[in-house]
Image 1 (cartoon, rainbow, N blue to C red):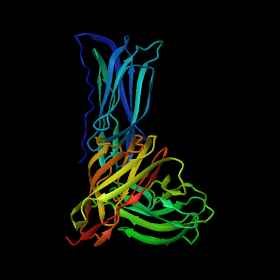
Image 2 (image 1 turned 30 degrees about the vertical axis):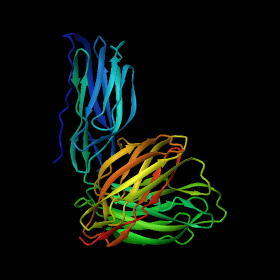
Image 3 (image 1 turned 135 degrees about the vertical axis):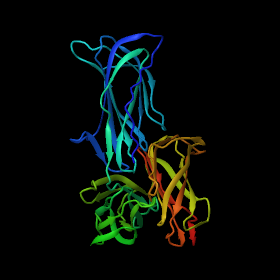
Image 4 (image 1 turned 90 degrees about the horizontal axis):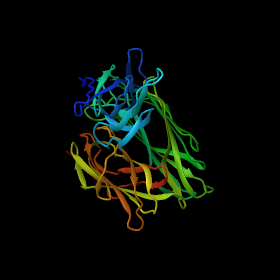
Length: 434
């Protein structure tokens, strides 16, 4: 059952001094319903806001705020920091562990108005359904009267949790040629996702040609396929099972698009749309699967992936190494990397992440059992002639029913300022009988 934390507000005494400040601490979670709980799907992001008001006659000095997230939650990012407090020292959260911020002086209120410190951030919910309570620790430089409000309660409902990614098997194309795309939809939630439909908005001058493969463990409930030369190919509809025994529900569509001869040189991306039943929020993911026609105009970043072993038995594991190299004289910012694993393989664990040999962390935490793990965002420094590299090492689980033979792995990425060239392993791992 879910881990439940008790709200703990802990003042820190200093030299026996007693402050005349009185702090009132409240916390809320985004989208709280009439039962005062925020209901979210497994693995999704939820916003939490901590509000600290000084209702006393004196200032509260040396205020530090530490949030102890419930078990299974992961801190993602700070969204806002407000109020009329004075920040006296900058202490921001690290990539791992519970978030901690400091240090402030919260002035005494005046003319009936309270002085406040407000911190809002996002955290990723766990996959396990249940009720979770957030814990806040407030530390001060002098013993201060602190009043704790009710905790923020997040309820992870037994619902589907859908992720969708789109990758191009080649990052380059020529006018008059073709591009192969792979769309992967994973259900890492705890309930069946009904009526999943996928559409792709192709770039100008790109036309849908044919569907070469539909894989996964979903059941098709409606047969709608795109006509040839469509600008907005649509496939429908599937029911994707919930995650079972560490394996996500999976739908993978492989299709080809023609690049018309008149397409100008440049970088082209697609927009993926996903709809489903009542428990599946519609999603639109833009700027995906970049393909360079001719010479690109942004920071060039190349991506490679390779398996560390040539063979992998059914029910065994295989380790992959993703290498992302920036050869530009400019840094690549907000880099997110997506790996589209072959059928029958699912993400197990991340072994290491490093930039230029130094360990780094990812705010995105891939769900065990997904077929499309994602990491990021990262900043890759300018590399120049020598190159600057991001290396991700992870393991994948081979299911007992994985198809025998060679299966290629595909890696892609997005960035706020870089043209990221995706790729697939040059020597695909060969799945053998377990």
